[in-house]
Image (tube, rainbow over all chains, first blue to last red; front, side, top):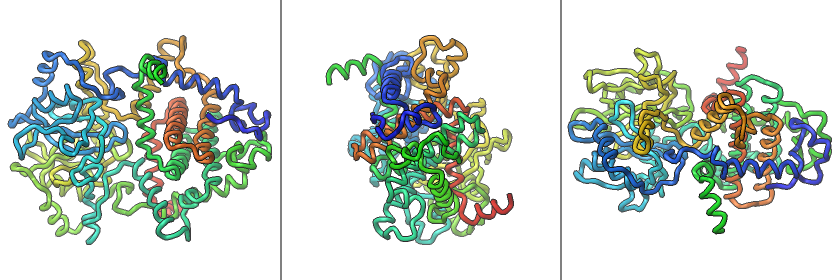
Length: 296
Length: 296
């Protein structure tokens, strides 16, 4: 935790809106409070059955498992669609099929397991590549004929080495001629932004910084970047203190997020790592956290 | 954009780390720069074929579409799995099947369309409920037998009224007795955090604020919340300026994100709205943005 810099006069700490940061005493107490609340206070931790838990083999009641497996609407070949999704990023990693045995094995081992239609056999993703998908939770849809394995992959999921199996955009293929062969991973908004920021940084390296975009300016000027992050945090806060409308709050949060993500890029940190931190704080119960502190 | 409060003395603006916020002049210029870069600078905008575009019917080359449709590995029933995913949140909304006609219709209309196996007919999600899924991009997997419709839903996707069709956790069902009937939407890390913060706020209303968790304290005390957001922004910045390690940056970003999300909760704003803002800034080309400004 940062100490309050001595250059900030006491007067600027007086109010939330005007303050650079709270006084050292306040900041320390508050930080401890947050860490206590976050990591140790059971009131903040989630149910043990939730997706936030680190996956581990579960001692399951075999009768209950059988009942559950029987409740799935398997198709005429005894299969249901099984989709593997990254618990932190939401990326759809791959899609296969599961039969009763594959789902049962996934439930007990917490490694995403499918039924290979071509080989007519069970296969656990990663059994060859070692890139297992560690299952945190499993969801059934309303019709009980579609399954999500929500998990954390050990490495790239696709056999091509790509992070996910979905890297062919239909609209790219239709619009381009050579672009048809250009691969682009399926990404949702946050990761599209992250990709764009990464590309701007690569362009600085490959093309120099001539005619820089705003993102490039931020990437090249840490002082500017830092002052923008402070400013955007202040503007987000102002929407609360000045009771500005919700749309303004969403806009200011978008501003803050974008600028903070430029900083992450400069530091070489991915949003996935941030979410992993958040998930681990959630999943760690007070007892586990205390125990890990005693060991260290 | 917020003006710098007059209570902040000039000395505190001198350096990035120590500054409460940049001077009004700097902040204004920088903010304009950011908005220019973000919303108007074509260098920041993404390819027109990308997921960031607002969906609209596309004038497609029918020969190219036919070639693409023929390249999909349809199964012995002429079908492929089609998964609808929320472009902003990454939530898997539903899974159905598409045949050649359904995919072709989705490509041209940008409304997620499936083939109903039970009714043996085409159906566009939303044709009855009006909750269409507006498709921003379509992805094929490495085997070309699985499709993602990446889009924005007009409303809840599930026929039950749930946001997504996946609300039955296998581990909840196995662990609980009554919990079997307890529905819980599939959520990735960020949205699990958002849910937890929402629950804390509901608990304040239903149970009072006795024995408050850290999250509840923040929800109840705007001054504390604001000072924490400022502090966490400062600590994130410090990891850059002091060249702290990457893990520290990820931790501080997690801290900032959590506290900012508590503020969003107080304001009644969802992360999905923030991502929508980001996506719209991306998708708007300089020309479009200029045009919309001239009209307003």
